[in-house]
Length: 162
Image (cartoon, helix red, strand yellow):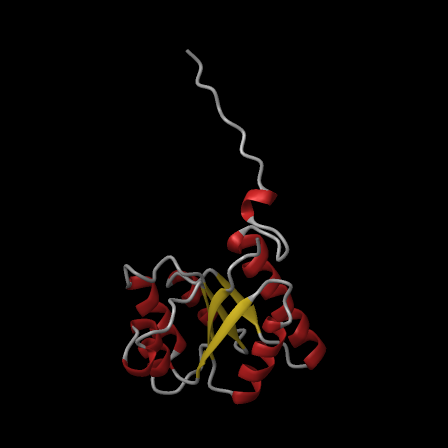
């Protein structure tokens, strides 16, 4: 049995970055469905299941740029982490900003990781691939793309001492 696809919400106002990030995430060995939003308001609508997003699956991972129109990334992050239904969804900040205030502020609001967007294609590809492998594999569903959790995990009963 294979893993069910990881639902990803990718929020970035730059169409080229959205396309590249989606492309590199989709090349992962782990199956995923990647949904995109181009600004903070659209991300909130998606997360609330509003309007055209009424029937979308809740994301298992959010990849969020900070510099967004209409509602900045920090405001989206804050809304996610304050929502009882979303606060456990991992949020990866993927931003060009290397400003300590942005990094620290993101972690203070509950970001699960902060990845700086590299300025060249090979490093960008490596960063996104590593991010996908970590969140889809290691921190995600804990199964390989070829096998079920039950096939990968040995369950050892623990006997209580009397």
